[in-house]
Amino acid sequence: MKKHLSVFLFITINFIVCSVFSQTDTVINGKHYKILEEKKETDIIKTDKKKKSIPPLDSTFVINNKKLCYYNNWLTVGAGMQQNLTYKRSLGFTGGLDFNFHIKQHYFQLGANLSGESFGFYNNYEFHLGYGKRYEDKDIHLAGFAGITYSTGYAKVGDTVYTRPFSLPGLYAQVEVIKKITYDVGAGAAFFVDWNQEQAILGARFIVYFSGAYKGKKYAAGKSID
Image (cartoon, rainbow, N blue to C red; front, top):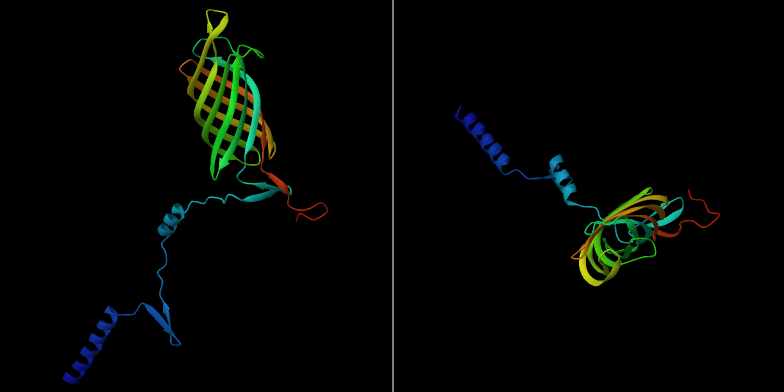
């Protein structure tokens, strides 16, 4: 009886020791294979959230055999109406030109805007530099910028004469909404507000859009695009 009890105790102790100090790898044909814990679904989600996909600066894609670059510069030019909020004048004319460019993944706007009581009669010349964000696909282009300005011109003295000069820094914000005709050409509207110590102006312009996204054809003439 004691012999059987000793054998039973020996087997039990060995089983406990093996369970406590069991190996974490598997041996097959003399090779050790490490046991890897499966990642939980929550861990995978957390990892995906940490990794933000940013396209490389030289990223290109193809639409209708046109090779287009993801990061590109664009130009807008147009004219419209503006309202001087400070002097409560009637609607006047405004015209503007903006060159929009990127440094790495960041977009900037450099432009000029002139305004006055009517076309051909201008009393305010504004230059601006701003930082912004952009969204575009094959059908639309949206962009918003805000930044600093420098305005120069003449303020009205009395009811009719513009004789008081001014030159002031200020602030501006602008939003562009474009419907594309092709991927790199479109038309739409720009809405802006311009403020300095002399005056505040709110306006809208009809603009045409030209993008530098086009980088040539993927396939030469006569070759299949499949």
